[in-house]
Image 1 (cartoon, rainbow, N blue to C red):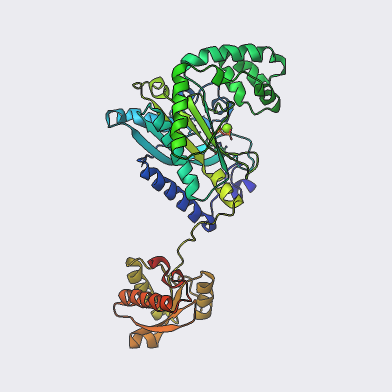
Image 2: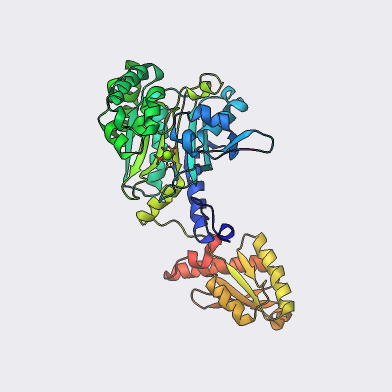
Length: 444
Ligand code: ATP
Ligand code: MG
């Protein structure tokens, strides 16, 4: 039965006590992205497997061992997206977005799927906030994308992130580097893991990204890409740094960053933290000038990044950063009998149309039990309807924060209730001892 009552390994639920945080984080990131000109795109959760093989790269860990790939009933090979860029590029091509004014800036929040060994900060279903900037080859675009990442972290008050940047050159200058790497790793070939032995011929740079301690130990002394990049790539990298300096963004150059996906060219970067254990890269990105063309489109330069949202949330937690609480329920309309509960439904419907968060009894509870429930829900106001209230056309509305009661007419109840709560907030504000949000709630 555990199969029925336990989520699949490496996946998890986001319960109501937490989901408002996800919603806040996701909408805030999209909002900040929008300030930088990035517009939201939504692409499917699954794509043709070929798309990821071609874009992420056959020699990467993701394609070699992490993809959720299956044949659908029509015999097509389908893969759940392991990252967001490939789908965005596919959509960019499919809809001819390259004919629109450039740069075309896209942002997304998406689930991603990778068959990995689950541990803290490493899941099989995780979520990314990502951005892609198409059609801008200049170093200013790399720097702007990095600046967006920085803005997002700053907004949330995350101050312990280190920005690490590197250039991995272009296919031209990488040739010499790959030759040097092959020579170096060949002299250590017996110690490399089996996967890396296979990578040596096809893509020796992948060895630099291997997670095995032995391979990464050997990789530590490997030739450095920055000694091999061509003049154009060097000038591009220097210019990116100039832009970052001008924007007051601190960074360190880390020549060992190559990133886990094959499509990167020139600038690569990571935001790394010391606060959440081994899975320390919260955001990774870079330039991928060849990818659009590689997938059959025109030659369009591009750059972007992705933030791992679960790691981001771990970081908020580790740093003790609180997010704004969800709006409380404004009003609970309790009832003393069936007839009054029907009136409660009518009034609830009226106030809800005016944006008031309101509840009434749908369980058939006693008045006492209704009040207990309202208390547990942390509602701001309660009102108790009985035969007398309905006959007199007035109900007392009680402020739960201070116990004061105000009679409110049932005729035009929504307007009367809202006016009452605003008047009360103004009074309390003048007295100066009450947090206005505790009596105005979602109305603010
Ligand atoms: P790592 O080196 O940690 O495996 P990666 O290089 O595979 O990361 P990317 O493909 O660049 O990661 O994905 C961008 C971001 O997505 C990462 O920086 C991380 O925050 C997040 N991420 C990647 N894989 C996972 C995962 N399995 N679970 C949770 N978050 C992940
Ligand atoms: Mg990985």
